[in-house]
Length: 294
Ligand SMILES: NC(=O)c1ccc[n+]([C@@H]2O[C@H](COP(=O)([O-])OP(=O)(O)OC[C@H]3O[C@@H](n4cnc5c(N)ncnc54)[C@H](OP(=O)(O)O)[C@@H]3O)[C@@H](O)[C@H]2O)c1
Image (cartoon, rainbow, N blue to C red; front, top):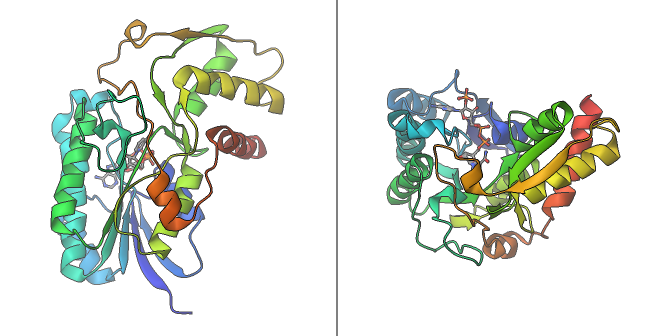
């Protein structure tokens, strides 16, 4: 079988890890983490692409520390704008395609119905603005050979995320206040990785949205994590924790979050013939995996 050559960058992150373990047989994958390939270094990116000549590049690398970005703006832009720009320029020069991941944080959150792919971005944080400027840059460099998939609230058994933080806090504390007035959709990185590979196989181009299906507040998500983890025995019967809904203003953070960031997924469902997968069943699958690793 003729294998397509794919270069994956940011392989050490949540999505990068899931992409590496779901790679299709038709793909010859070269995967680099940050220490192996720094996407913000233009010369290194050009050299790597020119010598390895991938058919496609998948960018799972990003600066994702949303709150730290408020005071590390230069670094966030170097990674989230200049990094994808370097990859797109290298792809353009070598004739490769690019799959890039973006975020619900490009939107302001003022809508109350799901964001469409062509809704106007209006980021409210440095992280969101740096991601949006990366998206704009690569769309102009590589308009025809590029897929951008915006996603949200990503978690995985690998890496740091809301689910793992909650499990730790729920075991340590008797009570937790969790924000109930930000609405979005939790997304298991494993499912996202499978969608990226489907998008790759279909040579999808354009801007798309993918999260798991359904909607939740962070409070709803925390309650689900607690209930599922208790019923699976990940949290023991003695780990009792009361989860209280609180307002965003009661838990101030440096970066503003969209209060509503549900994404409309219908274009990618239709383009790839995908059945919606509810976030709660994806959560159960991830927790099963954590349980198996315990
Ligand atoms: N996590 C979320 O909730 C979320 C929500 C919406 C969209 N997204 C988007 O989804 C994509 C994947 O996110 P994720 O959750 O997998 O993030 P992640 O776990 O933070 O992974 C990002 C990876 O990129 C690496 N990286 C940072 N700077 C780099 C550089 N200059 N060159 C190469 N690699 C670099 C990081 O390495 P270090 O850790 O060593 O810095 C990390 O391994 C990103 O585009 C992100 O913006 C994420």
